[in-house]
Image (cartoon, rainbow, N blue to C red; front, side, top):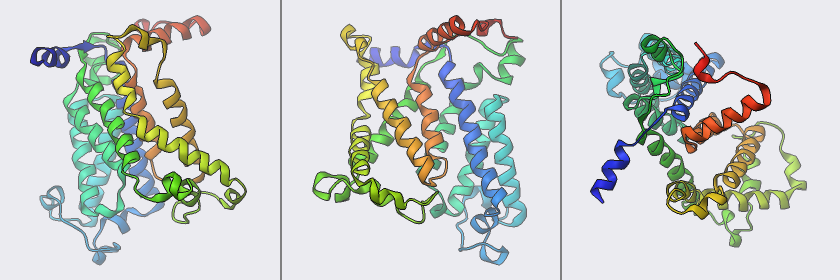
Length: 313
């Protein structure tokens, strides 16, 4: 068993999905912080009351070493984190940029913890792995400087993609089985989605129309529970498909990802849940290996006559 574990940890593959994931994580983080600054809530969220903030704040170590949250230090951390997030997306000094973005975002999270959400933890968990992984080895400025090309097919460590893939599987599976409210289950009438869409603090648009589509919201609740409670089957299928040939005939990712896009698309349309849908979708890129991306690219080349990525310089 130990030998098998060592073999898994030492396995390598080109960092196709991991590189694409890195780009999206940086953009999602930048969007979240820039939006907070653009609409003017940064001072209310991250400054103490004497400087215009809403509530007394904590003093995480990142702000403590800077002298506490003041207009100057909050601006430094906020803009420094945004710059680092763009460097993560560009793949410039990727490991350092990921670590800086992580610490800056953690500082903003912990100084006023109630202002965050579960999506923030998906971002910080991603940044930890990006800082420890070869995510900047391809499709990056680092790759261009090192090799003279934008893309590098050299196999790299395989474990970061799987650790992050298990992260989203654990997130969904726990979210499903931890739903104890009766409205999520048959004895509560499957009315959770109906109630959620009508919550005024989350409304994106006028949602009174759901009163005429109650059966559809019940179906949406059922599908949400099937999706979340059963998502652990996706990494299990991915792990076993190479050992059991018959499993390859049924790509379990397809129905789950179709449900995911419908679910997150609905949430994005009718509710304001921050970047939850966008960071979740970014994780889906990790559910496919380099060989599958290569096959998809060959298919696109056949359809549109695009050059192979190795030809790009």
